[in-house]
Length: 149
Image 1: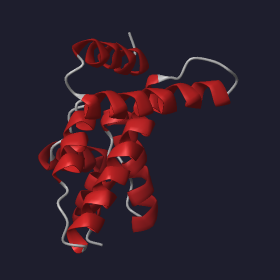
Image 2: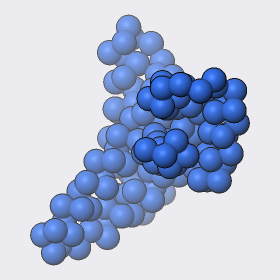
Image 3: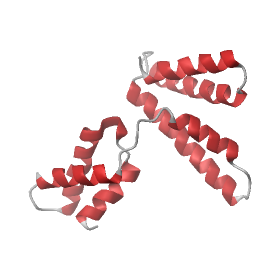
Image 4: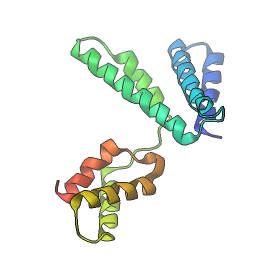
């Protein structure tokens, strides 16, 4: 059972409950976007990594909306709630300590040389190691700190 079917199952459950219209609207939009990705790519099922990318895009957009509302001095509580609902579909985040340990282990296997090349090799290794849990926004600053950039 993949992420797309989990979202669809949660949408159906929310529709049956009939108590949370915001949740139904969010999950309906999310499920539609997730399904559209697969259909646009050859009328096939959406993969978990594609569905995860859609969820991350939704979270990023919601976070930007929160920032915009905060600048305007308006309440963003309902958007924060949506972010909480969306984050339930994201894999557990990798801690900075895990990233640092993994980056140091990868660096140990790389011969000295160009720091930019080392940065690329470390990021590639982290992507391979953490897969869907890889978050460049969180990992790149840690790697830069290790490399001394």
